[in-house]
Amino acid sequence: MEERGSPDGDPARNLEQGPEGPETPIQVVLRVRPMSAAELRRGEQSVLHCSGTRTLQVSPPGGGPEVAFRFGAVLDGASTQDDVFRACGVRRLGELALRGFSCTVFTFGQTGSGKTYTLTGPPPQGEGVPVPPSLAGIVQRTFTWLLDRVQHMDVPVTLQASYLEIYNEQIRDLLSLGAPRPLPVRWNKTRGFYVEQLRVVEFGSLGTLMELLQMGLSRRRSSAHTLNQASSRSHALLTLYISHQTQMPPVDPGEPPAGGKLCFVDLAGSEKVAATGSRGELMLEANSINRSLLALGHCISLLLGPQRKQSHIPFRDSKLTKLLADSLGGHGVTLMVACVSPSAQCLPETLSTLRYASRAQRVTTRPQAPRSPKAKPPQHLETELLQLQEENRHLRSQLGQMDPKASGLSGARVAWAQRNLYGMLQEFMLENERLRKEKRQLQSTRDLAHGEQRILAQQVRELERRLLSACYLQQPGPGPAPPCPCVMVPPLLCHAPPPLCPRCQLCPLCCAPLAHWACPRRELHLPQMCSSKAPADGPPSARPPPWAPPCCPSSAKCSKERSHSEWAQTQVLAEMLTEEKVMPSAPPLPVGSLNTSPVLRGGAAVPNLARRLEALRDQIGTSLRRGRSQPPPP
Ligand code: ADP
Ligand code: MG
Image (cartoon, rainbow, N blue to C red; front, side, top):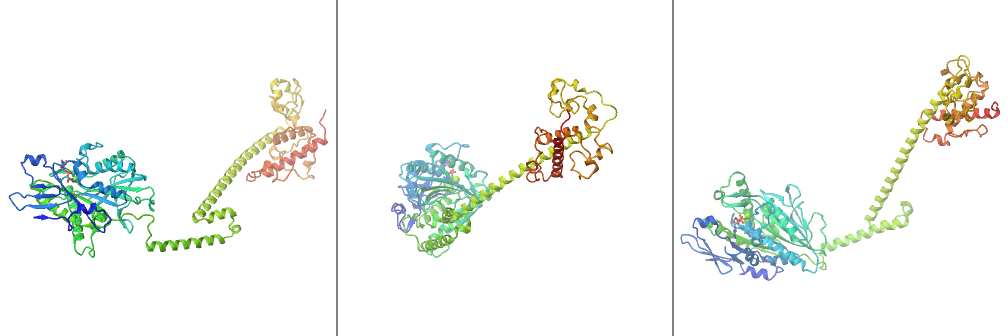
């Protein structure tokens, strides 16, 4: 008895004819793993025999009827990894992916039958330890072939990769930068089913790609059970995206580029929980694996049915079928590598796999390459394009009607903004930035003015303090004045700043004008300094200070003539205020309005500052005028 794979005979020939035909069947290749050491120790005999390169014969123990299965290629336990790579037709898929087709290679079979070994070689021997080249699987060999092929192409190609696993019905990114977290599967009209937020990494060299593979392999879930010491507990999907730089970039930044892709799917194996001895978490994982494989089998059965076109295919039943929907029933090109064990103990599962694989190679897809840019766009796109062009014309005409003067923009800038809406947006952003800058400048000017105001207030306080002390010096003291002690002033102090000592005016040592505060006993001069004309009635604090606002001319106090010592005292005040030497013949100090005086800038906020400074000016002006009309005593 022989179970034929394809209704029209040779699936391999179909693939060779190219994918552009209306329907292309899934290509199926069978690999039989060699007897394991344990099986040999038990003295087991293989129940599977190859007949030629494409037929497998199953001989049940106990002399049951033999069954034959035909596939695209059959590789027995003696075949090497390189034999598998050359015979399975993966290079053909690579070529199609370079031409823009979406291609998938997936392994299928019972747990421990050699699926992971066929795709990526024996399990990793340690963190970052690569598989020895002779044991490298289909994936590594395809990487090498593809990178070499890309280097010899005329058109520059961009290569990217993503790697995910479906573990307990959750999708985890094996290339994520942090710890893998569950990602959602979404669907849209253009992309079909896709994984949102999946990390897609660009690579340019074989080394980088191998590192990505190694990273994914080491993060993938695997556990030991009776049938396999490194059993994969998840389905893993490694995808290479191939795009030519002439192709349009994706509209959505998270979307992989338009172009071909080559996806390697390592399915977790179906397992009988009783046979593997799975308990607890292992059992949960096994149930989840079996459920998703069942959904896959169901979809394949429906795809084979005579009512296929009318019937609904439940791809949404599991994450696995969602992500394989395009490979199985859509526009992809698919290769299945069915793996079986030669052990008699695994015969039921082996037969099940063989039947499953036989059915799968009758499933057809309608591969579609991306349209060339010169191809005519579909009708609805053409209509949409016309609508957008019309809208664009309308917006342009509206912009043209805008009055440049009314909008406050210069003619050249308006013309620039009219080019498109993006230009206008930029215009607003620039304007906004300019206003922000202006605001910052105003703020810094205000801060400077505040600082200046504080300094002025301090200066005024200091001047007031000095004036107050000068006023007290004018009080008459009891008893006769002692002889002028200026002779005791050391020569250095002769050059202390003015004012002059009102008693002798000149230093007896150097004949320079002598500062009265340079004299160590200057308090003793006070009676002379203040003279007899100083008001003696009332306490000193009750008397108005010299800088007090001028009283009315009819006042009794104001009518008193001030002495020359008063003039000298006023001169001191004037010099302190103006920081200049004031000569008796100098014109009076300017008495301008408060607003025009530079000294008052920023001083409006100091209590009474303006009034106090004005009073000082008046006082000084009056004294200066009086000093000019009254010559100093000889
Ligand atoms: P699966 O992925 O189907 O569960 P594995 O690929 O993990 O199975 O293989 C199970 C065991 O069998 C591993 O130890 C692996 O090294 C070994 N094995 C599988 N196929 C081969 C082969 N063709 N040659 C040598 N060893 C193999
Ligand atoms: Mg595996």
